[in-house]
Amino acid sequence: MTEPTRFLVVGGGPAGTQAATTAATQGAAVTVIEKDIVGGAAHLWDCLPSKTMAASALRQTSVRNAVKLGLINDPGTVSTEVLGDRIAEITADINANWVELLTSQRVAMVGGAGRFTGPDTVVAETMDGERRFRFDKALVSTGSFPRIPNWAPVDAKRVLISRDVYDLDAVPEHVVIIGSGVTGVEFTHIFESMGSKVSLVVSRQQILPHRDPEVAAVLEEDFLERGIRLVIGARAEAIDVGDDGVSVRCDDGRVVSGSHALLAVGSVPLSDGLGLEEAGVEVSESGHIVVDEFQRTTAGHIYAAGDVTGQMPLSSVAAMQGRKIARHALGLPVQPLDYRKVAEAIFTEPEIASVGLVEVDAAAEGRKVRTTKVPFTSNARSVLQHFTRGFVKVISDPATGVVLGGTIVGHRASELIGVIALAVQAGVTAQVLVETLMVHPSMTEAITDAAE
Image (tube, rainbow, N blue to C red; front, side, top):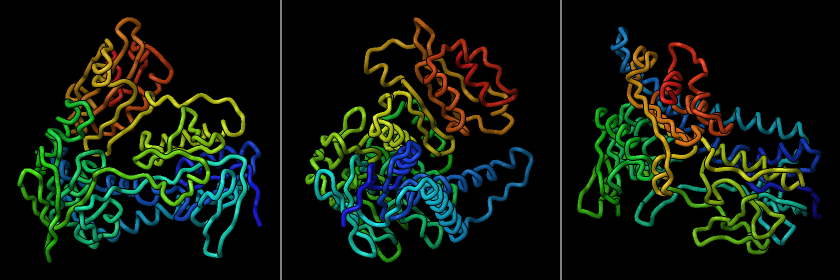
């Protein structure tokens, strides 16, 4: 028996859940097929679990600095068991909330793996056997998985990927982190704050190789002050595992030893085994699903969103893609997502956040911009809290004064960037920011100071 549905979602991550709720509120019959938990990898393995660990790491950093605020300096000890239980509880609660929301909107929930068998049919492999569906429109939002090079003997004990860190029995003695992108630097901060010795293997000449060098320099300075070893310009090519530790061999002959190794070298899309060829959906050589500006695949009635497309790997982006896809699929007016206006953040301490145009891109495009910068050392609230590392940059059009983007490196930058993000989205001028009365003392004043 084939079950009909108007809108079928394969993969219940941020894109899938947002698409489902949006379509359901418009009265469409919606079916979601998800093999793990609702919320996807973002909730189960990536964003929320790692940021839960980052929250604990931030507390440890704050306690370390407490003596400078007149308090007793006693960082305490991290319990991996308590932290793991907290992550599991948060994950379970979010999953339950999403299931309740989707069910209340009469979205049909199917636990299993979905596979296309034709241009408008999908089979779901469930615990109770196969279920077949025929759809009008569909969305593929199956996400990605951490990339594991063929030279890395991942065993979830000594050699880890990011998904293994939440089940560790104890805080590692010495973690060798391979990869200095977002995931690599976030776990560098987390493990050092929790008491591990950390060595970071950096294949380029700076951490965060695709970011503003000035931004990377601030974080590098913080890492060095923490005692983190930066192995610059070394590409890992092998890992030897012993009874009591690991040795990471690099292409320049250097060997970095520790108790554990953590791989943070990107991700691969989960597009295999979905029957995309049978559905007429094109996949690139890298395994990413090819989409247009409205997220349509080469099969026009099938959409794709999130990490499986190779676009900005952010859950916020995937969620917005999902909402727009649902509207487009139902024939409602919608504008393509403007990726230049996406705010993003790196959850280290100091945090790094940016939105809109950045100096590196402006220079590459030969575009003239005005950049103004204010360090947090000149901000009263930052000084009072002893979080003075970092700065605010505001980028504007020199002819019109319109705010084009901004970068913040500092405490709670992920929260502060919202002010600049709103300015970029609204297309306001720097003068509008200057005339906006912020709370005093507050770190948001650094934004108005930079605008002024």
